[in-house]
Length: 212
Length: 273
Image 1 (cartoon, each protein chain N blue to C red):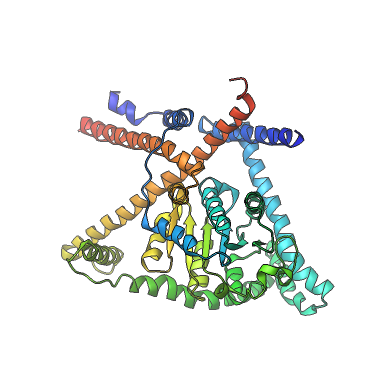
Image 2: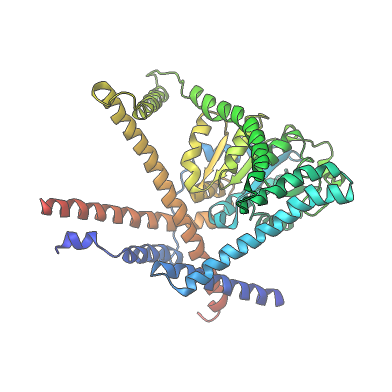
């Protein structure tokens, strides 16, 4: 029974905060502000604690203090000097950490990004075109769409004549992409609303179900 | 001011009210709508279904509570399907506000199927910088995660005996919101050639279809619709299936508002001429 009461209290709070957030749809108000600040505060606080126990303690404190790996102090120091960003006089010191991080990130990411997000995507556009079935036709559609969309972003030649027609096809291709993205975004946003409405239905049923 | 001009200046709160009513009615008077199963959703289902009992799947719960509405049904159904088939899971949560939420889900579902931590599943938890974590796991899970979420060393967990990296798991299913998805494609698939499957939010879905076509992704669940497809395939109808009827009504209302808005726009323009 204690658990049930606990659940009921927490669900009541959740339902109240849901209404607080929805109240913004009418107009901005203090209830919305309270709920908004709670979300920001709880998220930041949770993240700080998670980062402390999953980053700082196992990756710096334990190796240095418990395992005597003193060289872990070097990345620790690099992390610490990032805080000099807040001082106008000493902000330049943080560039050491930033350049170190940028160097590693660039070295790791650039070749793989080129391979996986450019070359693989280019090669997957090189498709067989035929008219034996719908696949061949759709392959043609993909090739034409990609080429025309690329032409739309080619600004060194005026979009006139054949170039203009291709650019027009390109913008239509982009519009189809944006339309799909918009439709899916609407679906995503409505899903969030559905979740809250189902939660409220279950909440009211659990509280008032025996009365109704 | 004529009718069309008034329509163009309609207070947006009427639209919110319209959508709210549209969403509430199917909740109070539920009905079912057919769900079309897409090949990309079926690919995820068949991957789990074809995994033999005892084999390991890596399940990444890479989202925060703000994406729970769309992604929790996917994670829940995949976990239930895996446990019911005797598949073992290595689970991570690489989104910063997600590890507590993921732990709650894991303990709830493991209890349902009487599954033991360390034997039937291992929960690695969270480590900062998902890209580096994913890259390091390709060498050895023990590099970013010397211990599991509960502080037990991975080497002392029976399930992790002989399990080193992505080569020792059948594939990776990442239920993901945000750019962590890119890291799975870039590092786990691109660098280590792991089989990667995604469950993503509706907003992200269109962005990941090109990766499906290029073969970098082997299956994709998109938003609540993808979750409902999966629930139907796994015969575990739940929140996502319930949400489809509401989604249908809400979409019809949104379409109606778009049509009415366009009529108002073109007619008021015509009148001005």
